Each structure stands twice: as structure tokens, then as C-alpha cells.
Amino acid sequence: MLFSTLGRRIMVPTAAIFMFAFAGCLGPRKIDKWVAKHYQNEPVDPPRHKSEQISFISKLPELGVPPSQTEKQRSHMLPLLFYWQYDYTWSCTLNPDLPVNNFESTVLTGAGHGLKQKLGSNHLELTIQQLPHGFIMEDKGWLVYVILFDFGNEVISVQPQPTDMVVSYRLVSSTNEELKTGTITVVDPNKTKRLKWFHSLKKTTWQYLEQYDANMAAMSKDLVNKLAAEL
Image 1 (cartoon, rainbow, N blue to C red):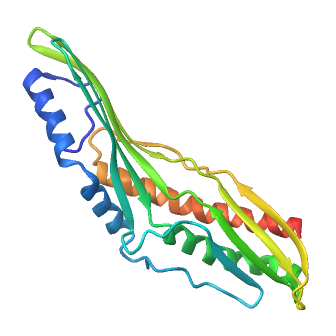
Image 2 (tube, rainbow, N blue to C red; image 1 turned 120 degrees about the vertical axis):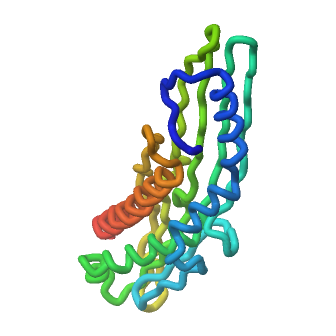
């Protein structure tokens, strides 16, 4: 059932059945199930990355054990005599431990390329103020009835909830003297993934999450480079 009907010309009963069936079979539990499948090999535990030179503090809220938590954000349908319009939206919040783990492991790996050398005997404390950790799934469309047929358009997409990476830092000496503080921001580069013809929404969701994971690592590397330039 979860296939795009962009610009499709179909019989009126079929269109109505499709919309109601789609809204009924897609819900928070199904979206959370897809997210859990994508992250099945990723530990959803409080991050414990640390080194002698770098430590981490996260200000992101805790979500517990589930990889995600999805809620229906909007459900609207306008069924008129010759025109139907609908808009369904679900908001998915990823467990912050997932991007924080990604961030910390990437920073510690990237720090070996110059940052640790700059630190010397000093200690760097990184406080994660915010990270992107959610997306929106949206199904919007309209139908116009003409005699025995209807014409319509439907757009189903997985969209980011734009949130920049914001990390504050504190550099202290071996004697615990504060040497420098600051905040670094990296712009969220995540983009919307639209459901294509004959593609499943589950696969589109996984493609979005793959993009998200790769972008989290890229943002973390960018932050390491900016830190090395500032210190």
C-alpha cells in the first residue's frame, strides 16, 4: 500500500480506499519499527566516550531505551463533493544517544589529525548543547472528481527538523586553570527525501536515516576542524 500515487488518474472508489488505508496502516508504531530496524546494530546506551585529553557533556534530553518516539502531529482531511484535500504529518524524535554516540566517536577519531597535538597537556571539555535528532513524515495531496474519474496529486516525504549542531568548549590547563572558552555552530545539512514512483516508504525512511548518519559524522568532522583552528 505504501507507494507513491503522484499525478495518478484512478477511479473514485479506489482513490478513497487508498487514502483511508494509507492513513490507517501508517502510524507511530510502524515508523518507530522502521527506525529500530535501521539502528538494530547500534547501542542505544548513554555514551561513555572519553580520553585523557577530551571529555564530553550532553545537554540533550534523555529518551530512555527506544531508538525513537513518534507522534501524530497533524491529521486533516477536507472531503467535499467534488474535491478532497488531506494532510497527514508524523513527528519522529530519535533517541539523542544515537547522534551523541556518533558525534563523540567521530570527534575522538578526528582529533588525532591535529587537535590532540594542539591540546598538549591541556584538557578539552565539550558540551553538546543541541544536535539534529528528529524528522517529519508528511503525506499531502488533493483529489478532484470529474464524472467517473478523479485527478489528483500526492506528495509523501521524509523531512528534517532543521537543528544546527551547537557545541560549547572549555579548555583548561593541567592545573585546572581555564584557558579559553567558546561555542561552535555547524549548520544542519540534512535534506528532504521524497517518495518516488514504485518505491516503498520504509526504504525511503532508511535512505533518509543513512543520509542523516553520514551528515552527523560530517558535521562532527567539521566541528573538529573549527576547534583546531580556534585553539
